[in-house]
Length: 399
Ligand code: PMP
Image 1 (cartoon, rainbow, N blue to C red):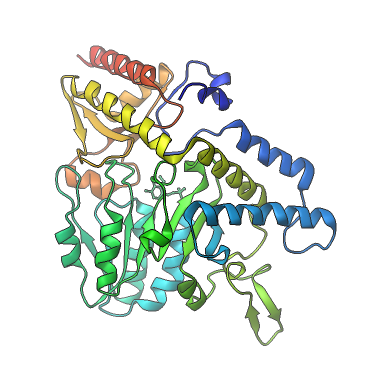
Image 2 (image 1 turned 30 degrees about the vertical axis):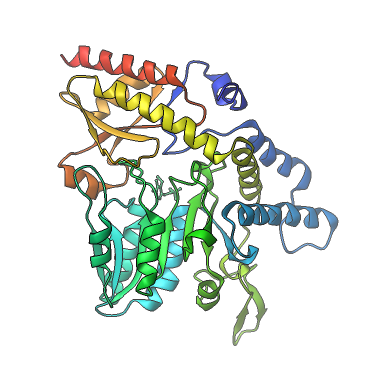
């Protein structure tokens, strides 16, 4: 991954920065920042409304990203690509329409015990509102779900499965292709949270046959405040809109409103146009490097970091699945994770400490918090060495 670092201006500003928090948000390459800037400088107008050439340019730039997402996820049609503000927004969209209308008294929504709060609370709220039941598939101490447990959890009352591809806390990569097959064999649609997998796993929604899939731009080297919901056309057409206003209508009178077809039906109001343009540049960046190349690099770093961390006396890694993405949670006995993060921060080593929006995982391991290191394309072995050096310093302070 030589020279990749030089594509990210943040490392020019902070040459010694060891950024190990990409699961929270990735850094942005020049091309993404430049694309947003260029949009405001050269193409800025509202989309889908103006007839004048500048408005047509803005609309073209916005819709070009939809086409890129179509290729990126291999969706059958551009109509199935909805721009949202991020994964959280995408989950809420499906929860407040599809799930709310399907789940009745006694019906069930199946999730895993390792979901981010964003892929837990919206379904929990639907169940609370409709008298449904949230069914949770457990994981073992290694952080692995069992497909047998998953299969058992799906009953004739299950209306939807919502599962994360990669756990943002444990790093576990879930076998979503198998899970989708199992759910479909029981006629249950599946929502996949791809927030943590999108940067390093090739996602082909047709090969997966997934019903809904969501990701955030900012975890894909793109801007914050923009994300994607993919949904099968048959589902999106059957769903009522969740937000109302401009852009999403066909005809309005005081008596009734006819809604626009998908995807506009789900994009009320002026969207994050520059963000969507930036997302397009982020997809170009990822494709120029290649997700398989990114994955190979992150896998190598993961192996190196895991071995180095295992050699530290008094350090316990939380989440030891065989199939792991570039995320390592751990605790350092005798030092609170927040103290670890503070001391490392003083050495320009950016890691995260906390529950990582997965409090049920903390409850399972009976921990208040973990330290989390997450790896990306701009990290190298040197970053890991600095992390290890920093952790030894922490140990010396707390000895
Ligand atoms: N799901 C997972 C697995 C995540 O890691 C995150 C972000 N940490 C989210 C959902 C929510 O993403 P966002 O905050 O971008 O909406």
